[in-house]
Length: 320
Image (cartoon, rainbow, N blue to C red; front, top):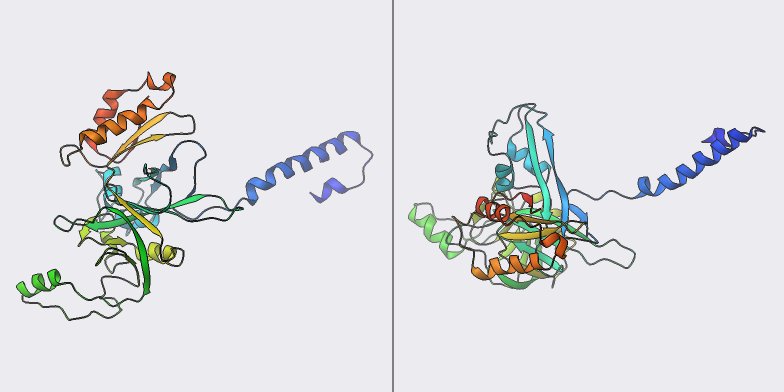
């Protein structure tokens, strides 16, 4: 750029310098705009889809599919659905792995924490100042297994604990005693603590959002009802989520999305063969389709919608 300020009597050279300076000034905002961390997205001005699906190549022969999932902010079920023919433990150096990092935002108020148990994912909408960009942060989670369902409904955070102690509940004590291995009354902080290093208590007795000492279980239905996060993820949000933050726990297995051009998409996480979808759920989907402009609605491929819901693959699939 310094050469543009060399004194010259050449008109062409002067015009060329002015053009370069103008181009540089136009380009500065694009380079100056800070990039967001993994899993953080600006809220779309139009539509409700964030992120993108992309492919990476396995660089280290020691990498597992779970290592790759964690590095790209997705969970066990997500990475398995996206790569059904890839070995979980030895994908192999050079293997192409699809990263399903595109999400339709849940159809609820964008406030506080939203946990969609159907997709094993948490969304956090932080409060922002007037000069800040509204955004969403999203993370894979583990939830309650069969018989230990994570409760649904709106609650709030009540307390944050760093290096929490774990007091095994009665159900754990009974199971352990039946195996002849009764647990201690309390498990202190450390590598054996299933709560990890961070815990956020909810206003539902006995339920928390917490870390884990078994991060490979993130993205699975494996807990006793609590919401598990990868240790890195809960550490990232721990100081951001104040006490009293709203937490909305929902079960939305089918989501209808719209991109910036109002084109419709569907994302289904559980096959109709595995989980009943109520008539009200399906009517809600149809009603959302009905809100599209006539020119878009008339082109909806309802057969594609039915097939996507039946597959429950978690992919965002076009409906036109």
